[in-house]
Length: 320
Image (cartoon, rainbow, N blue to C red):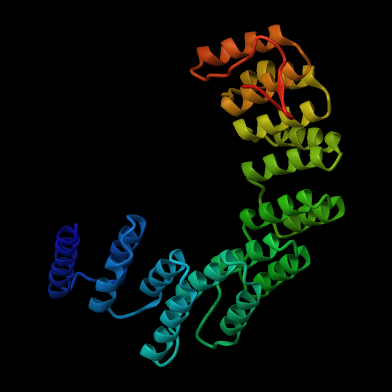
């Protein structure tokens, strides 16, 4: 086992030597090779890469990630410190290493270090936070339940000349729905509109399902209608969200209509989540025959949905 590992390291060292000799070891190839080793669970081979290359932002970010995966935050910090010393200051690509460090702190739940690291980025004349930087910050504060700081981070993002994309607003919308905050939810939608950020399919799905969660199913229905009026074809997830909204609103017949009428008319294919949601709801209302018919239709499409002989509960869950 040790011999195999050693020969692997020797082969990698030889490869780097050949690439370096032929001047093929540029920043892009370094990043690709390093990422491949990290994805394959070979972080130790990154050390060989770092010995053959100048420590720069993208390579440093991979080394930081490798340390984080071993829960070695001190090692991650040392890499970033070495990056500063080796260049006598920061380079523009070094933000990748800082993003990796920020993400490491966020995953560890260390919000103080997240804030401190971002403050260091903000104060630097050579480091410029990018969209990824702010996305990491927003997810970290969201996990802590501090939506006020999330909103302030979005404003800071805009102040830095970075336009928030739909993913940022999707994260915030979902957070407001989880916190049962309809006022914050509506304000976030308006801010998204003012920022001229077009909602995507994920947004539509979140909005429809969130209105059901917040107790405004009629607004979810209106949103879906607006999608169709704007000639936007909803995908399977959006249609399933409408279906779920109607199930939660105790309108099972209308929910079935989405599956059997709306989706076929739009040319949208239901998936296993769509069928299981409806079948589960039918069993909950003891409509066993209808549940079996839909389960058969699902099987004809290659989707298996199990229906018990009778409505049986185990704890709070139905048997499937």
